[in-house]
Length: 227
Image 1 (cartoon, one colour):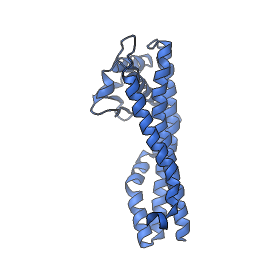
Image 2 (cartoon, rainbow, N blue to C red):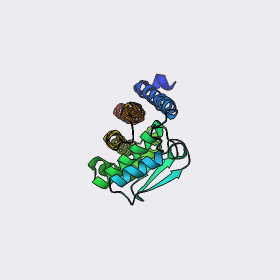
Image 3 (cartoon, one colour):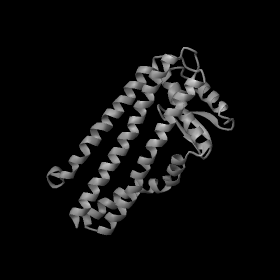
């Protein structure tokens, strides 16, 4: 019945397929190169610590956190957090992830503008994530155009966040490859698998941004039809 009444759902099919492919790609690529060891024997946290020190970021600490691929850099507490599957691993996949998060720490220290913009809109994007859809659902059910408009505005902040995230993540991955190459931490033939891991991870952000954009287009069409 939803398909009959709302043909705009068809706009989401490419986004759903891309998201499924991106998730498959990142999991399969990470699993593949988890079994390929760094020939120098470095572990992920050791690589991260060395890269941070070379960048002069001695005050950025490294912590291990639960989960798999939950790795992130926290700019507020200046802590690089590596997941259990990454922290003590000497695999190329794990080291690539650790180097990527180190790239974020260096972005923060250097005042990378896209990162500043992303951090600035995080509060609004969080509000949009939590509130936009309840407002939109109520607006469409009860025919309240003002609620629909507010929901679309808040969801637009989420879309903007996803778009700004793309250059931030791509830049962090590029920094990671350069750091691994210039730091003598990888042999040259190990850079390719590391790049494959990071490219697969980047695809998930592309998929998320594309899905958000298609959702926004769909909402605008529905809003126009409501008028």
